[in-house]
Length: 118
Image (cartoon, rainbow, N blue to C red; front, side, top):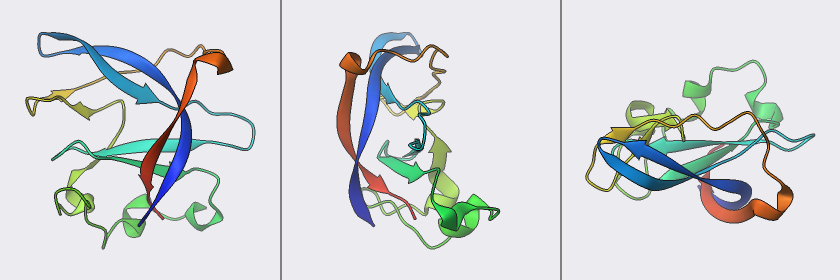
């Protein structure tokens, strides 16, 4: 597994009585869309290139069948969840966040490094 740079946006979520939990999210763009995932066991983040031809018509779980989280060694077939729809808070609880459908301006974007799956 290698790291990849991904353009994303910052958001803030509320979960389990905590507020202003910083999350990041991606948005679809023409010819460029990386979907984020998280290891729900430790919170590590991963990116998947939605335009990758190796994904076409194949079940996603087949690609992560032998992958383990580089942070906690959990099997990703058991712990991988869509992010930021699901995220792990600092105290180990699970939160949920749905980004708005409005795409923020490019000036609000940032580039972060994630583990790339596939």
